[in-house]
Length: 256
Image (cartoon, rainbow, N blue to C red; front, top):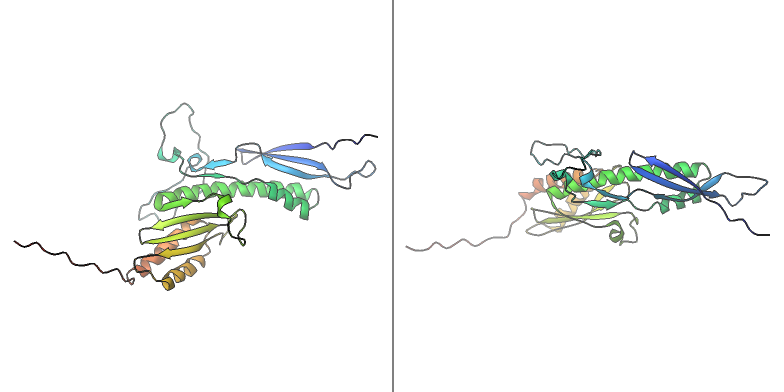
């Protein structure tokens, strides 16, 4: 008697008016002809492009002194495809790839039963898309303010204690301080989802001052890298006047 091949039921959903989520459903291990059990999630992926750029969204990146708050809420921009004129916001400076959804499928199959598994995958897929959409906007603003190096997610997870979806961002400030920020998978949607992982400074900054600033900033419960860097800049300005500078020799005056 020939074994019947397991058929996969494919469901496609449109999320957030832009992305198409494909979910493959298959029979559970207990499914038989006499006792039919619900289908469960076997796989999930985005049919649409998983690449996001800051040029896709409008955001306020003004650096005016009177601008106390930075608007980082992205909105899709309706562009004229025939237009050749590009505004500064249309020039992509940051791109991120939404990670595969395999980890969500694994969690749903490990901890949940149908139909809660498909509900979990849909909910968490939407949350991941929202999170990375907001993150790409934040990183675009960050790059306009500081010398910024953005690591890919795959190359950021070098530590055994870090999540495979963590991301590193390196920022250098005019105060001769460089920081390594670590963005967790929930950044920038939850407090404490970004923190200063490493901080180094030259030109008179002591290790004690740097570690104190790191602890103060990490204790602010920041949601995203923009607000965290603003807190760090304020802390630097507060301490900068007391930092000893390298002495310079006076210039000799030319005679006659």
